[in-house]
Image (cartoon, rainbow, N blue to C red; front, side):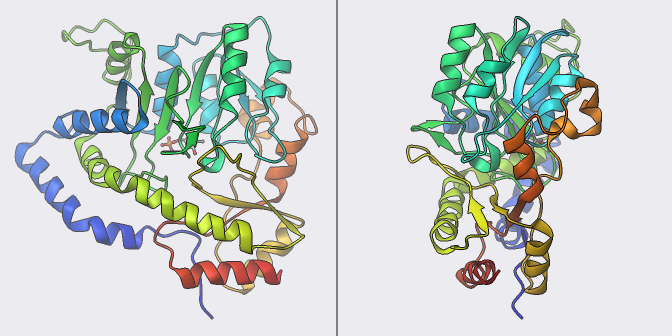
Length: 365
Ligand SMILES: *Cc1c(COP(=O)(O)O)cnc(C)c1O
């Protein structure tokens, strides 16, 4: 039986191994390990790629969210509206700053934050909306931007799953006040370790972010801020500099595979995530919503097709957020998705035989 793994970085890593070894070797020779030339080069190229004036490299995606929100002066007592259908780090950044996450429901078709639910949740304390481009699918940014304007709110995009995705032609991560990215190895653009970046246009945030990530040290070398150590390392920046030129091509390959899943997986027991036609989704994950998760996964298992859950539980039902008192049953579309979602194999190096096999097995269910 032909097995299809859920995910593999093996082919991509082997292909890039020699260039990475050469870059690492140069860094060892010049001994500039942290926040050096590779980091600056990556920040410039990534800002250019995303279409923003500035990008600041940090140690991981969670740090990018945390520092991005801190630069936007999110304070205790402020409320942040975000979807409960996301990875836990989105809300972690909010709660660690002492602000209150307010979880809202997703659209039942696109599975991204529902602007109507956002508007209902706005209170006098709301400071910010955090759209999450879930699985690489751009959120309804025009409606969210209108809401932000109408109620004078800020927007920090969690673009950790959506490097290169476009909303009506605009790169996600460049539309809100802050765009936060993770380069966790399995992301569309991944380092060979942890890394992240914050993207923005307003030059006023640059000094603060660069100081926050580096123990509060400003451009003149004075410790003018209360900071953290969330610095990017040059090894990771070097890997990202090697990989960035391939991102567009890898996203195209993801989309080509997704296109085949969209059209060739035809089974009344599974449904697909809907992407608005004007948007360019980058399929960080290909997720199906199935009638019975246990039965579907047993079927995939029996036929050697790998799978995963993204995620097991919506954020309002996770233990750290029980203090918010958002009960089960309050976010029906989110709860339904996370009870029945199954991610199937999709990564750029997957060959056609593997794609065909996944389609065949899902259709057999
Ligand atoms: C991966 C991810 C993060 C966190 O990134 P790390 O680099 O793992 O800290 C945040 N939000 C979302 C939606 C993610 O998928």
